[in-house]
Structure formats: structure tokens, C-alpha cells
Length: 121
Picture 1: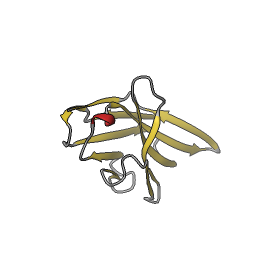
Picture 2 (picture 1 turned 30 degrees about the vertical axis):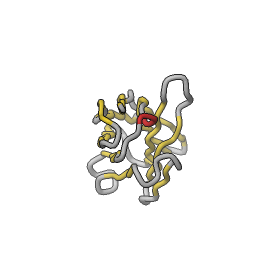
Picture 3 (picture 1 turned 120 degrees about the vertical axis):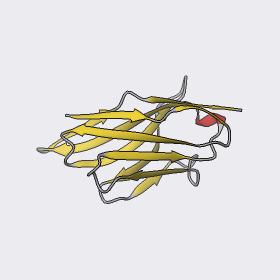
Picture 4 (picture 1 turned 90 degrees about the vertical axis):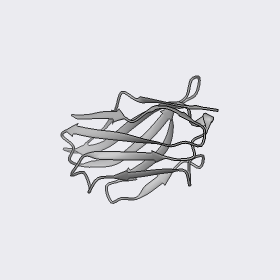
């Protein structure tokens, strides 16, 4: 079982920045990928950014050049970050952390409870 706890959300003006954190606990070995997703009211949840075990990153086109996903020393400190710069009102959403794990041949997906990000004009 993997437990994910997000933090760092809040209210910010357009052009501002926030740094989200995703802290993992529990059985965190064999996590393949950690991703940040977001869901705005009335919209589907979408992938914002992801980072794999070997450090490869992937970003949605809408956030490229503005958001950066990173992690502490492999999984040693068990935290993945999402640095969000040049925020826009359309970035307003609940942001969720997701972990994809394969353990004992079984693949599981875990979600955090989410953190609200609100960007005002």
C-alpha cells in the first residue's frame, strides 16, 4: 500500500508561482512513475507532468516551459515536486498525485487526496 499526500496548493495571482509536493509513504519500492494530474470543475482529469524511476519526464503541452516536475534523490526522501511558474487562470484545478507501482507482479495505481490551486486574474 502506498499513501500519497499532496501539499502546497493555494490562491495565487496570474503570473505567480506555487510549488506542490507529493510525499509518499508505505511500501514505496517498485514505483515506476509518479504523475501530477489536475481536474477543473466540469472537466476530465488530465495528466500535467510525470517522472519515471530513471528520471525521464513528460509534460502536457499546456504547461511545457512553465511547470517542472522533480524528485528527491530517487525515492530516498519519497517526495516529488511540481514547480509551477507563470500561472494562468486556466491552471485553476484540484491537483492530484498519482503513483504507478508494480509489486509482486501486480500493477497498482494510487492517488492522493488532491490540493486546490486557484489562480486569479
